[in-house]
Image (cartoon, rainbow over all chains, first blue to last red; front, side, top):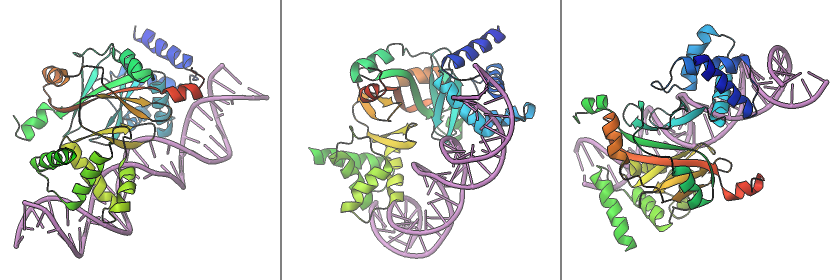
Length: 150
Length: 150
DNA sequence: TTTTTTGCAAATGATTTGCACTCCG
DNA sequence: CGGAGTGCAAATCATTTGCAAAAAA
């Protein structure tokens, strides 16, 4: 069933108008197989992991592919101000992100209803919504400890 | 009453542990007097506008001050992926942002309830929330026209 | 074939930083 | 006074880009 998910992703990438290349296949497989949810990796991290097994993937291609996956609505980009890097998250069950203002760690949370947001945004602004992102900033439990907030 | 708002901002800045300098005063006054809501200016834009009247304000200080104002919860930072720049918004009535994926234009919207978000985030993750940000991405009416989506 | 895509290296450019000087408190 | 804050210029560094070669459709 993992393979089915992978194939569905390829299909979605194609339907967004992009070709399926060997490199893109490696990257999609990597993202799905490595359960990136808890990691929220950056392009650099993905590249480093990937090149061990696939030396024929360049960093520029990783950047390029990740951007295409965002456009294809397979990935979500999270610009993390704390570390200055763009992180990625697989676009599955709708959820939001909680980012540590001290160490930059990102975790997912699911207990906030955002279903109506696109329609409301369209009603309010006339924009044609394609995606949305909810982000909470705060201090993670570990950093609370470190900072004596706990 | 504008002056009262300005004084309140100074107070808030002080209470966050920062000193009140001439430059910071200029910047806060500029932000409040120029109703930045519709503009969502960047550090560069603020600097350019400001230096006409106050040549003794450097770009580095503008960057620095804006960051302090964010920390003091007077401003909200919006990293706009489309133009690659950080925009700022005065932190008044809670609202969310709708960003054009084509031209980068940012508008405010108010019709989505986010009051419970911080508590929910804390309950779900154990983080100590200090702020949050809701952002919708889509194509603005003008770009819909340009792109033939309308 | 025709159009994309890749990979390398170089460019970009917004933001950050080091440091000597100045000023707020 | 002493620690913060400023201004300048230089450094940083994640991301983007140009272009020739390679691969998809």
